[in-house]
Image (tube, rainbow, N blue to C red):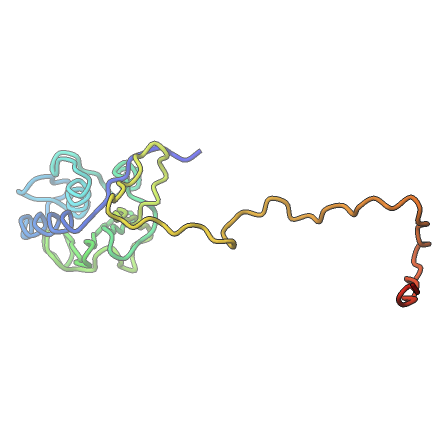
Length: 200
């Protein structure tokens, strides 16, 4: 049975909000275990971005590379990577982010704190990757989710044609019963030749 959970989706407005957040915290000093504008490390920055993207408080709900998988799953991320989505890559000692527009974001790379740039989520050193689905990616696996809105001005779908109709019974009907006054031909016998018209 599919796990029923709501999935937060990234759209253009959220992407702009993430860029705004990253610009605001850019230059934050590197501080191991930090979780405030006074300093943070790589997983703190990944936490901030993931929290902002999923509507959580940015500070005070951070994760570390050791529990990053569970933390990202709890925030609606999926395994793998996807172009145009919020992607996060990590290994046991480092993590970095690539925003939906392709902007890489990191902390602790090249001896600096939080900055726009660096290798992002797609560095070769990362053995784990997760992404936050985009709105268009939602073939939602939650059957309790509401259906998409209906456009009252959309044209009606075309009426089904003969090719669209279901085949009710594709079997041939049984042959009609034999005439009791006519003897049945022997098995594998060739049909009798046509004698031509009957004389009048």
